[in-house]
Amino acid sequence: MLSPPNLNKNSNIKKDSNKKKPTFILRFLKYYYGERTYERSEKQIQNEKFLLFSIPFNRWFLFPSALLVQICLGAFYGWSIFNKPIDSYIYNDPIKGKAPITYYITMGVYGITLLFAGPWLERNGPRRGLLLGGILYSFAHFFAAIGIYKKQIAVVYVGYGVFSGIGNSFTYLSPVSALQKWFPDHRGLASGISVCGLSIGSIIFSQCILPMVKKFNIVLTFVILGCIFLFVILLQSLIFRLPPTPNYIPNNKLKNQINQIETIESINEIKETETIEINNNNNNNNNNNNNNNNNNNNNNNNNNNNNNNNNNNNNNNNIEILKEPDFSRMTIIQSITSYEFRVLYFMFFANGVCSNIISSRLSNFVQDIFYKDAETASMVVAVNSVFNFLGRILFALISEKIGRKESFNIILTTLVIVFWLITKIITDHSYGGFISLIWFYSFMYGGGFGVVPAFLTDLFGSKNISTCHAIILTSWNLSGVCGGFIFTGIYDALRGNGHKVDDPILYNVNFYWVACVIMVGWFASFIIPVKPKYRLYPPIPNQLLQFTMFNRIFRLIKRNKNPFEMVSKEKENEEWNNYLINYNNSLNNKLEYNNLENNNLENNNNNNNQINTPQK
Image (cartoon, rainbow, N blue to C red; front, top):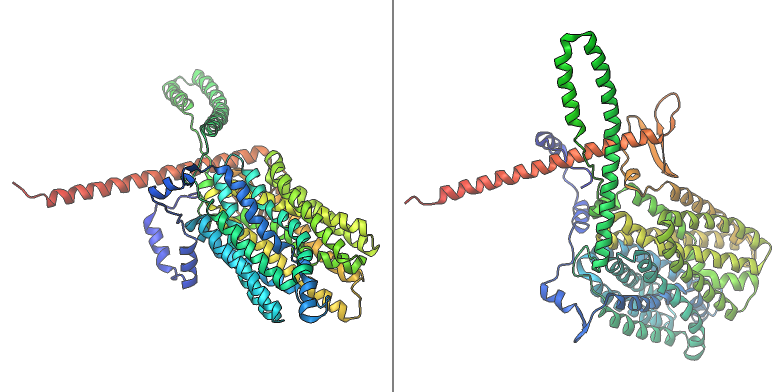
């Protein structure tokens, strides 16, 4: 799509003959991530126009439904409240530290499942995704109840970790991808609403779990939660569906807006091309004047110069409109292997590197470092979820105004500051300062989650959102799992050396490396290209590195003098214009080649029909 194929068939044949056949794994991945969509019959599409009986379906029903689904998942993200009740029930030791491992196992399975959940959802739709995910997520709570009742932590690890991890991935992705497809006119709002329910669920269940444990015990608490989640998620699955068309436009008003935007862009492109042509005209006119002067001196060349002038005048009337590449038509493979996707992957990795540490241990931090009781810790977790919720909603809306890239610039800059300050706060045992920074961190961290679905849709189109979002979430998952295990390893090693649970060194050593990782992601947030020009800007010979920052292009070139170059705006426009000319020529060549192939095919069919027609 973005780079039309070479039309020299002989060269392709020679190259292909030297290639080795791809392995089974590569063939499977190419097939699985191929361009296949959810197919429905006309009858299914007509039936989906109604919610129930004669009640017409309205896309705005999806907002509250998505909230309810994500609220159910929010119970998992308040896992730190379960830690001490589980350790107390199984080991009679509330600080045993075995229960938090369940969270990391779940996140590991969750990340692996995401690699397959995205393409599966594109082919099966959000309803089947919610049915599958809801059943698995609910049964994970039943298995956890069995493991706790039998006092077998391994059953909790496998039963809850595996089933909840798989169910979580399908249940989380289904509403996010569906809302991005249904709301192209409110992309930021859809992004924020589809993910903020996790925080609301964490708020609700952080206040409900301890009272439920005291009234029913920890075993029955998991059984009750599993039943609630099964009922709610399966009921919401009946509401979810995909739009009737792949590139859905909700109303005529939006169509008119899009037409106006396309008209304005076309006018701008024409103006830019005219500007280039006018400059060329001035040069040509200067040349013509020089030629006329020469003609006065050399009368023998008058006829030739007049012919050249006529040719120049004819060329001046030709104005070529150059089309920019359409990124919404990118395939899944092109999207997930692109440079900007890799940069965004690491940005999101940095955004979430400490998320699972905070989620799984915040209650322990409050009780162990600052000697607060379980109820106070539960309150801190609840308020932390409020800030997470606000970050998801507000940054999703803010990104509509200032841009997705700029939103990530603010988020990661703030996170770097937070984690360099928090070490001083812990050393001073400042409880107020600690919870303030943690809540501020959660606000910014939630903002990253609120922005990224719309960011991906802007970059790669709505048809690739399920797969792109699923794979991006593996970066958060990977950072959470790696961060969690590294934190636990350092924490346990220092505890083994005699440090107590309230010793600041247990936490400061970890937060130092967390801050360093976030700083790398912070730098990446400034160099990710988002405009078509910067995403496809052509390299030059001997170029080693190229990146964009503050709308300027920087290059590292292999040469003895001045290897580092900041491209001037004049040179940038010239090189980009040359690229667009070559790109449009390639598109035209490809179109001509396809037309030629179609004509040859039609001629062959006509010849075959004439041969097969019996003579009278």
